[in-house]
Length: 379
Ligand SMILES: C[S@@+](CC[C@H](N)C(=O)[O-])C[C@H]1O[C@@H](n2cnc3c(N)ncnc32)[C@H](O)[C@@H]1O
Image (tube, rainbow, N blue to C red):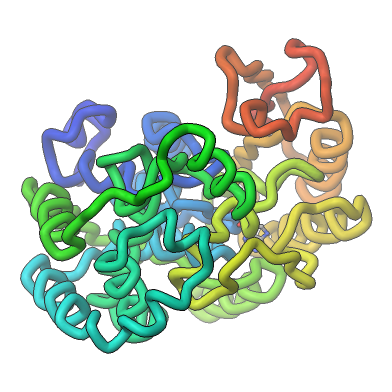
């Protein structure tokens, strides 16, 4: 069985496990060594572990690599694709072949590439626009693992610092708005997107990613794409049929009123078939949680249903926001569903400026009043 020592330095890139561990830039994500430490400390090989708000799926991946059966649920296709790929990347040659297919069909999209809005014309050169339109139309990422692997690699490099992605100068973790980006490029001398050959650029990144091999995950570990309030029922049914009890619930739910994973990821969501500009999403779980009632109900449903498949002596480890409403709601609900557990809190104040703070979602609290808190329930 692979131990934490066998995996090695998680911040290095020296083997397949560490190189795939950080696959996928995401927002409010677990540091990868933290995910491995928690799985290692609070569960045993062959145990079942669960993350109903999996994000880029570091918890599920750490569990799989360390020989635990790990299940996650994620509603945002960007996070789900990252997780799905790192748990089961397709064969390198098949991904390269598919890349070539997509590249070869790019000229069918020339007309559309010129019709894209000013934002896209400033963000990507025409060769990249044609290629992205071909990928957006032709990759069957929901059903086919080769296509899912290629698409998740494209999502990583879709935007970032000049030279590190396919775009003009952008941030990597989140996409800025349309007007803001146009104004910023114009004022800072970035009117023209860089000229990039997408085939060469992406093929090089695929070679790098696969250079140390792919992770071998022997346990049953997977991430379900969908809403945890619904998909948890599939897991409950499966657990009941097979008489399985989970020994670790390790998760970080969305924080009330803070992050909007849909508008932050709007450009990646466009590549997955979504709208050409950031758009308000009417689904209450696919936008920022501004309603306290919806937020309470989400945690109440998900933690309540998870409790049904947790072993009596399971550990519950929840990392959340330190701000009052999120923290108090989470504690109240966890106490309700795990009444016989001992609950302790470990504050994790932010030491440096966070993404959330950088992008003005701070609610203007003094620095020492926010950060994150780990809530740990044990028997
Ligand atoms: C704080 S993030 C988790 C980050 C994760 N720990 C990581 O390391 O990437 C919360 C996640 O919950 C997801 N989420 C929000 N509502 C959900 C729902 N109803 N069902 C499943 N996932 C949901 C969001 O899309 C987001 O990825």
